[in-house]
Each structure stands twice: as structure tokens, then as C-alpha cells.
Image 1 (spheres, one colour):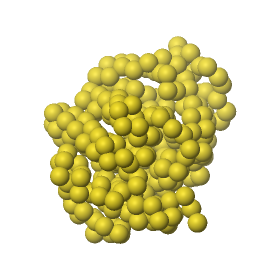
Image 2 (cartoon, rainbow, N blue to C red; image 1 turned 120 degrees about the vertical axis):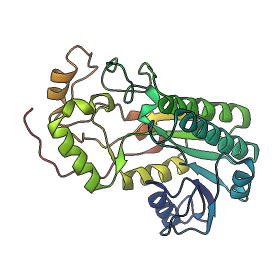
Image 3 (cartoon, helix red, strand yellow; image 1 turned 135 degrees about the vertical axis):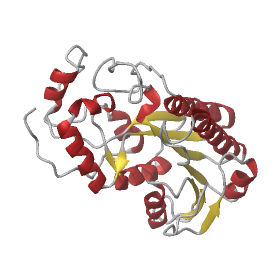
Length: 289
């Protein structure tokens, strides 16, 4: 028996990168899953598979019927995936629509796929660097693109939904999430151009760990609306973190020192609020920079 045994969970955006893996984890935990996706996914297995739009009040209301929990993954997940208006409006309307209807229906808890981009720097067009390391939930925000703005506003929507309807919401600020093959390819790219990973703190998360974090966030005892970073404990770059910071962020304050390839992100909230610790690391050597 698990806390999700017999629970009915709606997963939006289930046809994306994280969705099918999350659905499999939820079903393995005993949940009955309804999925709502903008398009079909031939390998998706769930108790109820729906095709619809999370911006549609009717589609979301139908998908929420009988749900106990919500996992909201649906989004246009990059600044350049569509025109600016479409990226921003799709993301903010979808998050509002799903959380508002879930809250009004009396659903007790939701998990939302947030992004490291909520603090604004990874896609920022200006030559900016983080105010300090490790990145944490108090890091100053500097937003210069519509995708990051949409993820930042999504966290505000989560707080509003909690205050208005009492629905507990956990927003997971995911870094780059992918399978091992793709992450190893990214590591080789950063071996050649390590500066490219600076504003994301060279962070990553395996898709399986992302799915695990969703299950943990659904079953955690935390109340209220929380948004926090989570990542693997090590970086995707094959260099020591202190060496990377010495070279590419020499003037940026460090609130503590980093051991080996330790990721320069404060992962304390993920551990304390949902009990998350990444299990998947990458088999990459540590090189001299």
C-alpha cells in the first residue's frame, strides 16, 4: 500500500518528455490516472486518456471529473518553441485554468512543473550572472523573456490558488530534464563550452528522478504553496564546480564552498518539503579545467 493507492490523479501534458514516465510511476504507486494532452501519444498507458487543451475550460472540467490530485505538466516549454504571445499566453492561461478549476472543485493538492527559468537568467539576452551561489529560492529575479515570465507568473498563480481555494500546490523548478543518453551528449557539449551552463548552475535531472519527485510532491505533508529548485547532486559539466566558478564567475559571491562536481544550487527545500534526493547520476569523469 502507498499513499496514492486508489487515488485518482489527473496528469496534464502527459505526452511530453516527463509525462509518460510520471504516469508510469503514479500507476506503479497505485493511482488511477487520467491524462490530458494536446496530442496523442501511442505509448501512453492510463485508465483514461484524453486529448484536449488545458486552456479550454470544458476540456479541463471534463478531465478533472472525479480527480483527487492534479499534476500539471502541460506547457510550451521553451522561449523559441512558438511566437512570444503563444508561449506566454498558453502557459499562464493553462496554469490558471487548471489550478482555478481544481481549487474550486475542492481538490486538495496539485503539483506543477515549474522551471529553473523562473528566476530569469538562463534565457536572459543580457550579459548577466547570478547574484550569488548556490542558487536558492531568494535569488534575485531578472526576467527578459516571455517563457521565463510565464513560469514566474505560474508560481504566483499557485500562491493565489492556495490563498483563494486552499489547494496546496508544489511547484518544482526543474532544470534541464532528459534521459541519460541526451544528458551525456549535453555533458560533451559543456566540456567544449562550459560557460554555457553557468546561469543554470550546470544542473540537470534524469527523467526518472523528475517522475519520482512528482510522486513525492503529491504525497508530502507540506501545506501551502511552495516553489523550489531541484536537481541531481552533481553537475552535468565534467569539471570541478569551484574551478568553473573561479573561471566564469570570479566576482560572484559564494555562500559556501563546493566539493568536486557538487551542483551549486541549494537543494534543502526539496529534501525538507518533499523528501527528494536524486538517485540518477551520470557516469562522467572529472576533468581539470
